[in-house]
Image (cartoon, rainbow, N blue to C red; front, top):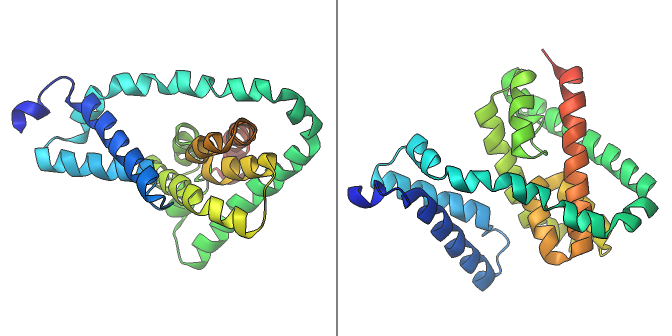
Amino acid sequence: MNALAAHPLFAIGLTLAAFLIATWLYRRSGWLLLQPVLVSVTLIVATLLLCGVDYATYRAGAEPIAWLLGPATLALAVPLQHNIKRIRQLFWPIMLTLLAGGVLSVTLTLAIGWALGADWVVLMSLAPKSVTMPIAMPVAEQIGGIASLAAVLVMLTGVIGTALGPWLLRWARVEHPAARGLSYGINAHAIGTAHALQEGEECGAFAALAMSLLGIATALLLPLLLSS
């Protein structure tokens, strides 16, 4: 086991194997709670603990996979370009939706956290939970939160939002691809966008748009409003 963990390709192989197993379980079961991201993380953490490998070693070995995050993010421009006319047609509804969704997300999060007795550091870690992790972590630090806690909250938000989102949208009889996409992008950021792309290109395009614009707005405005 130690020899296997010391292999240069251990981290990459573990990551790919965990994702493939998680995806297979998700497709076979159809359970929304078995999100591939959550299952993958669980499998990776369990394997690292079993092999006695610390996270820093795993992170260094999995660095080549992290390099792909940039190209993967840029690839979201493809569905956006294909649906640019549709986005222009719905420009003002999109802006109003992002404004309402962004404000409500932060306001309700802080209100519920305060009502439950969370201290300032936890509240500031909660505030950027609805945007993608590379934005949420530095924003949380800037406004007085903890980056690592914000990262965990972002992941949980994405997983829970993607698990419950389809069910809630069906319950509310929301069938329009643009509306579904905006909901995924606002409430479940990158994980929700990945799910939206599975529903269709238009849904994925609006999810990517919502995730991007909300992330930019959060990075610019949240520190101004909540900075300590």
